[in-house]
Length: 178
Image 1: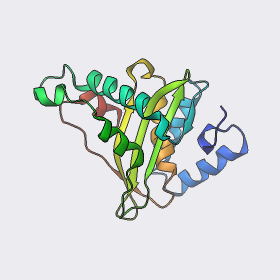
Image 2: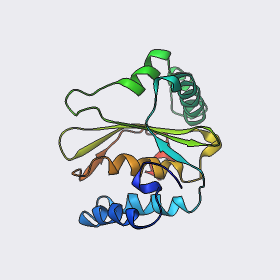
Image 3: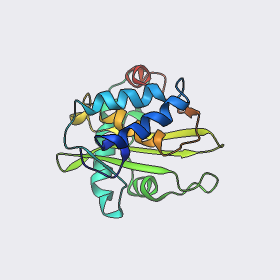
Image 4: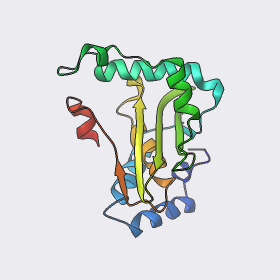
């Protein structure tokens, strides 16, 4: 795989990522190992930062992913089932800066020349990663892209030792995955 992120590289650079993982093996290593296993299943996936020109494609992918996750889920109110990302919410996902935690991390997974997934995270308080969004286009689910994006977000915060996220209780598929 070719790209700027260390998890995408083959060879000696990958050892640096693993060495960081072994410093906190009970915290980070399982996530990174799952991502490295996923790398063997996927080809031609690039991880990159979003650009403003990605707004239309990201909004489309987020709405398809939301609909697939929550559209027919029991125990979820109709307003959540039919919720969609507005232009403003999508723009905020790309551009929002968390003043207390720095700029945060926002990354895309690009596969087959389209957005396959998106992750948004920040660090606050120090040592805690807040996972705000992790969406994978249903057409790309089951290929390890979510693991790759999660590992890339975790790797962005070298001094973190825990991850915080919220999942709606009826979303058992996501709960099992995490």
